[in-house]
Length: 357
Ligand code: KG4
Ligand code: ZN
Image (cartoon, rainbow, N blue to C red; front, side):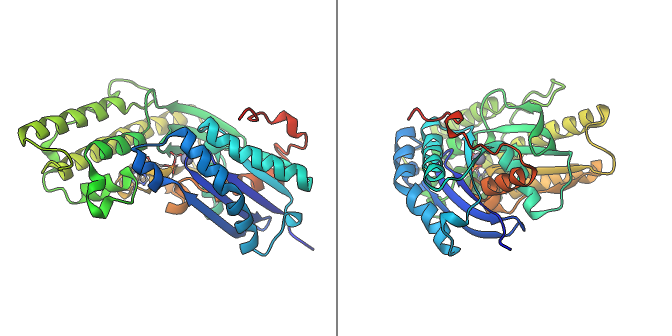
């Protein structure tokens, strides 16, 4: 008896990820190449550069993943690959390579939605039954949804402008946090979290609570970003800061931003819980909140959500940090869940259409 094994490939943004999971839900092998340091030098992700790096790394990452588990493509039952959403140029490399493997080894492809994979990977580590509430917070997205089944998501709300990770990254860049050696190699979000922990006067800056007067589950982070940048600019002028210097209040400002972001996320999540209760979308005996996506790594945010869950009798779950940020494991996991239920198994490869690039 040999188990079925699913190969997962992720290239939606700036990480080339790959993993193999078997049908006993065991993770056999995984690899991740992060382009983060290269993009840091450019001051942000340039899609062409990201695509070139994926093109260069996809083959060694996939064959390395198979080799680590002493597997070949003949051991694989299906290839799961991110279909959307993401940077089109980046997505195209993963899909193209998956199709190449699928044709050459005669395997089906299981297309995976990147955000669904972020949500469902929690089921790999915890016993989480459908339907459950999910808050996805990353560098590209912010949304609340009820996960009713593997392929059935009810969207409750999303960001009307940018994502929380995006404002952390942009503010960190403007604050020149990467000039601090301790922060030079980590993401903007991580740098903001570390700086905030050193704040001595976090209440010094007043930031607005976004969309406070709206009774829905949508998010907005642009206003927060603008307020933070304005405070930052004023302090630069006040202290006559020159290039590459940090304002003395940098930690306090990071803390203020983190607190305001947490407050907004908690406010909207609480609203989603009320809505689910009113509409019977979540049952009384299965009140579960999953928090995932890169920003879910933030302990301050997670603690704020945990307090809310404590008050509302929800159980809160978050995948391990490595599985919150982009990775190949979540794609393989989603592929396996679909494989077991015979959902989205595509043998006619021409019907998968990010072939343009
Ligand atoms: O999910 P992810 O790896 O990629 C996207 O799909 O966007 O998330 C990356 C984002 C980045 O914006 C990064 O700054 C943020 O997650 N992030 C954090 C933390 N770690 C990563 N934000 C806040 N606190 C953290 N500890
Ligand atoms: Zn992501």
